[in-house]
Amino acid sequence: MDQDAQVDVIVLGAGPAGENVAGRCADAGLAVTVVERELVGGECSYWGCIPSKTLIRPGEVLAAARRVPGAAAAVTGALDAAAVFARRDRLVGGFSDDSQVPWLTDKGVTLVRGTGRLTGRPRQVEVTAADGDRRVLTASRAVVVATGSRATVPPIPGLADAEPWDNRSATAARSVPRRLVVLGGGAVGAELAQAFRRLGSAEVTLVEGSPRLLAREEEFAGEQVRAAFEADGIAVRLGTRAVEVRRSRPGPEAPRGPVTVTLAGVAGTQAGAAGSDSAGGTVVADEILVAVGRTPATGDLGLAGVGLSPGRFIEVDDRFLAVGVSGGWLYAVGDVCGRALLTHMGKYQARIVADVITGRRDAAGEPARDVADNVAIPRVTFTDPQVSAVGLTERAAREAGLAVRAVSVATGGVAGASVRGEGITGTSKIVVDESRRVLVGATFTGPDTQEMVHAATVAIVGAVPVERLWHAVPSFPTVSEVWLRLLEEYGF
Image 1 (cartoon, rainbow, N blue to C red):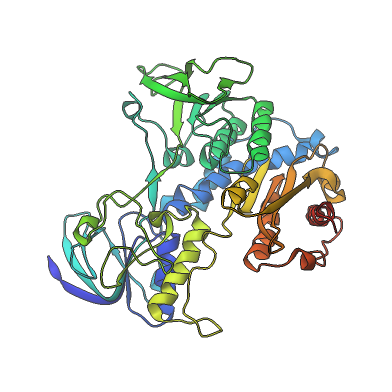
Image 2: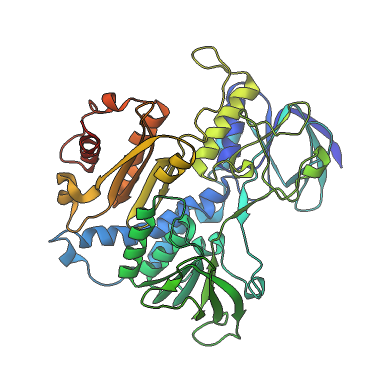
């Protein structure tokens, strides 16, 4: 074991959250060491946001062209899946972090390759390298856990033995399966189901246990995505769960052997498939993708030694200090703290933690604190139609005890949408807290709505009164004119 090495801050995990903590602390003059056992850049860069959106984009572009008379006639033939995969490989750097490491080292951050584990002593981490070599690091100020999460594999009989795809397998795929079953109708499952259907999968079946897709969003969002999926030829099985999975021996059409998934209805839901009254039966596919949730990557971090539960999310306070660890030295950001499993929120949390550790203060001289993590979480599901939302749904706002009023208009009902193509649909909705006359939530569905959600985020974070929003004039002809229509519907 190497001699103890001392630094100011140790960061476990070099994903987006860990990188931002490290970089911001280093910019403030602290000595920072980052411990990473895989690739600098983390899940998002290699197996999440970047590759998945790269796989989604070609089908999205073709769908947009087909909505425009004149352009539609030029769309012929099928997508070139090999070219799509090649571009994916370029954008993930060939699954090498050579291009990302300099971002850390240029700031003076020390990168240590290996698996970090808390020793049980305050601010101390033991790192085990791939060759078994071990060293101990001690931080003078803080240790930050930013190890992210991994795909959850539910205990369905036969599923683990069938070697299912998770988000990593799917986004790193080298070929398009002819038949694909997707378990999970959240953002990951929905995005990849449509991506592979448009890349060339002849049969795609999406299985979701709840009564609708994207269950945490406004109800109309899941309904509109389902309708679009069925128009794309995707079989959507709602109120349904997999109860058994079996992979058979390989054959000429299925080199890994076909997968048979046995389905059953979920009690208390209106179950069924498109065009079917039954939630049961079996589905045969070449690959099965599991996208039913995420598990925090905290099982082997030595959390028990500091009084925390391994394998669980790390509870944090409003400064992202780990609750239950004395001494105020252990922080957690990103997926591991369980607040908002989104890359941009992890980076936001990282900036707060770095400011807390370095003693940075805001313009008013106050210490940095979490002010929006549970108030205005922006999120986009990159399906077609896209679902772009921030803050609370109407139901969540009412369940929180707020007296709200919600208004909706058609996203395609403005001139800007007509210019973009034919048959553009979708819904735009705002949720207003009537007691304060400010927005607490907004949802936009339709093509390219991702660029509309930030205006709503600013309105919510800034607590802008709706009377002032009325004077934020949208340009013409843009789809953003739905803001004018929403406020008119509200009563202005």
